[in-house]
Amino acid sequence: MATRKNAVEAITAASATVAPMKFMKRPNYVQAMLVTKENAVEVAAWIEGRAVTDAVMGDYVVIPHAPAAQNRAKVGEYVVLYPNGNAARASADAFEETYIPA
Image (tube, rainbow, N blue to C red; front, side, top):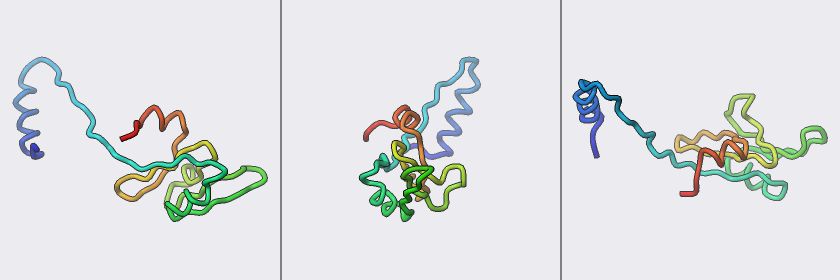
């Protein structure tokens, strides 16, 4: 595995040429669960959040320590747990476009 110093040296040496270089994003493994009416309590327990049933908002999971705009995952959305321990919500479309099963 190349060290950061070796990678920087390789990039510096290669950038002396006129052609652009190609880069690839490192794999980012996450854990995720799709929120359903049937599993909202389990999803909430998994991230140490809480499941809520609201007459106006419907069923959702409150994600602790997430920004206010991102702290509620409704039925049909994913709760994503990142390697650093942070959790966030993602729409099904955005999640399925970004991630594939590992």
